[in-house]
Length: 481
Image (cartoon, rainbow, N blue to C red; front, side):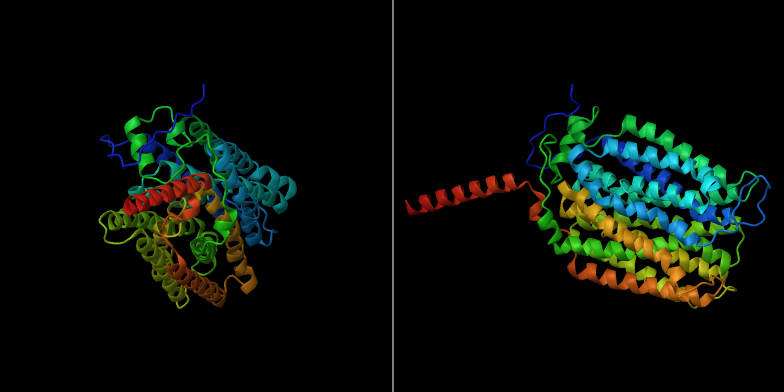
């Protein structure tokens, strides 16, 4: 028997369910914790690579490779694979459902995380690059598939909070991964144990996700009718899960608000992934922290990122719910905060030297933490523009903005060879700040919070148009009579 329930027809907005927690909250937790695990897995190598090239490991039994050069290439190789699967992930999740694609790709990424120490010993840095490329291919499904599921489960006035909670999982993953990996890599256990730990957690979580996750309220076995009515009546998503809406490619690519999301994502990707991959190196080479201090302090900005997201999201929803701001204005205000404040912090960081460790740490906290406000800006915006095609939009945006995720970390190598040179980092931070500002301004002028016409099924649009024309003709006939 099929798990898909018949669509519920409901034109008016249904009341909020009386139960404090429902099936939708379980789905939000599942999506968020998925990002905890897999962003932790993604981030661990940023800290682990320092131990991998160490000449004097804590134990002689720990394999290290001090002869490796081009560690930024190893770190950026994740995004080579990540770039490829974004658009296809959005399409596949919309046509066939996101859940099982997530299950398969999460399992694949977890297995290759376990293989990193094995292939490093067999094939050197090339083996690690291979693992990272495959992990990138797998994790390319994460955001399009997760946003596809979230768009079907999230009522209108909960979007900012849900987005912040789900995306906050990435921050938790980073916050926990950096000190945990640092502690393991700095101990006699060694960096390979961190790879085994995250790979094992990934496999375990994939099994849990497979049991409890659902693509939509229509495919969930235990969701109450009351909650399902509440969700479906307050979204513009296709409620008939058996009917697939064709993707309006031309309309999507000609949509200026979609391009605003794209540009904002490019700026945020450059800045955030430059910081994510290079903060440990900056702390090591300029601030001269040891690996345990480094991993803990490198995680601190992501604690701020998590807290800022949890604080900002309810405020954003309240501004919309209480009609203080429109959705459009709310998205632009929060996105501007998430772009311009990090830019100011990064420019200021260029004037700090190694004797001002506390100030440097504070500015990094400010730069990364304030970027959380984009969770209430461009990140949730695809659901505003088109709940039916949010996965595809996210796939398109992430596919091309991933290029900036690659170029950001690589810019460190392009701008200079000596990572102990403060001038190199001043140039890195200035460049990232300029990109933040330019992309934030573009979104401010061209972004939108309105549902686009191309969200609807063309057949339904034509039917509504015919009904409207008939009603107009009837009105004219009555007046003439």
